[in-house]
Image 1 (tube, rainbow, N blue to C red):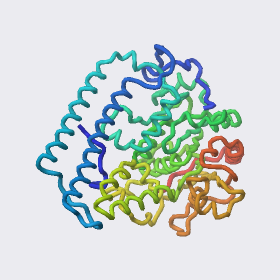
Image 2 (cartoon, rainbow, N blue to C red):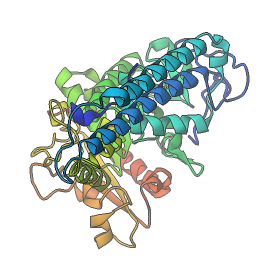
Image 3 (spheres, rainbow, N blue to C red):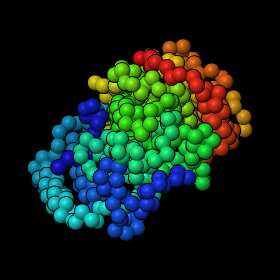
Image 4 (cartoon, one colour):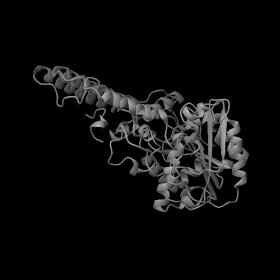
Length: 449
């Protein structure tokens, strides 16, 4: 039975598509099945996933307590590394028994839940369930994916919360009024595609109404490495553009927070792979994207170091190291595999010296927010929108090799707004509409590495 790892030890107002009932759920690619009842907060697969997670957590806590017990028993000095190994004798037998019984109970729960009838899994998901799953994936998503937990979110295109396969028949059924101009919306950490609708407003619906483009929403596990999601997103875009019901003339991507980093990563890997969609990409919009990282993750890294300083607190550092690869990538805005491969992602290290350039020939726009009354205040430098400093959201950096060079004419800053307010800012939407109109007819560009 797998357990929660100690990574430090190793390495809208969305409109339902025509012909797609709000109570329907996916039954086959591009199709739907009649739901047995209304939306559910819990599915049998959720119970299996929660059961596995509970077992893993119990095993992880047993390891933590045993490590602390072992340190105390060895009378370790107050500073330095904790003693290695496990407890022995009767104490070691007790901890071993706890692990054994927990594993057996977990296997039994999983086997019983696997026998539940498939019809119980066919109920549509509630927005509350979607929000909880998104948050869980943001914090533990890499672990959920690696351990095969049913709670892990697979990357897919969705419409009105319903998964749509990227084949011609499925896309034609889900998007009967498909436009040759597409805008793909990529959500941020711990969020999902339904949360583009906030306070009755959705950028996708607004852009569709004002420009005639078709909004498409990506749903993904935000706890995985940004570069892993970037590669998967690039492949998804390649299939989407190839199988779209009408020939695609222009593609735009709108990324909120981490979603902007996933989009940049996809551009990098799409360019490396020579994907056809890169020639269609005309515009990239970054909403509150931490291009150069976020202070909260850097603060979490300092907590790890402080806890590791004493053998008595070191076992508790494991709790901080549960946080996902997606979160640790936000320390410096890592978007390529080279930023983390073969490295301890919890170790303190400087930011990469170079940042992959923005795609060449593509119009890139940065929309940011500040909780202060005006840009340029101390608030901007320290907190920005509450999560992302203004300089990071605008791609500015003192080092030329890391500055993204987004022109001032393609920047917008909202005042007295926080990170999530960017999702429901009509003014931000109006700027995107204006910029799309200004760039209409301009060809997409090739992508730089």
